[in-house]
Image (tube, rainbow, N blue to C red; front, side):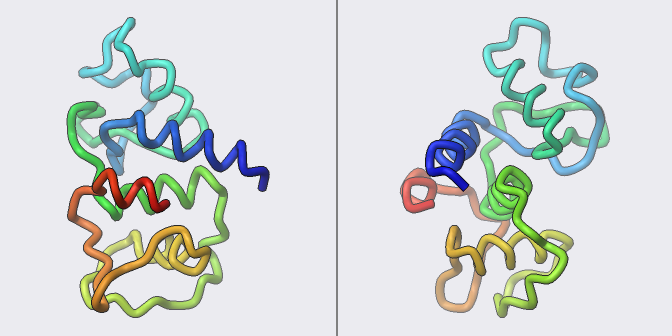
Length: 131
């Protein structure tokens, strides 16, 4: 994949303030009004299948992005193969995002620390810079 495409995906992720994990089309988010500064990017990411909304039809644009959510967005955005990633051994991973976390780990994009991935912790600016 070209570096410019990877950079574009990662830069757009930086601009995003939240990644809901369940939901509907961006046009139906009750908290993303027409003219919202990130409306176009949110809609584009929804159309590409990178992000989704919450079950209550919100996007929650002011929420922070967790490490697990970032792994999901990156795996989807870069179209990483999550069907045969094997396993990673993080003590704190027990949810559905394990395939995406394994994919970004195997690709060398993200990694854990001391045997943990810490998927529910916010992604720091320093961590995003290393990604």
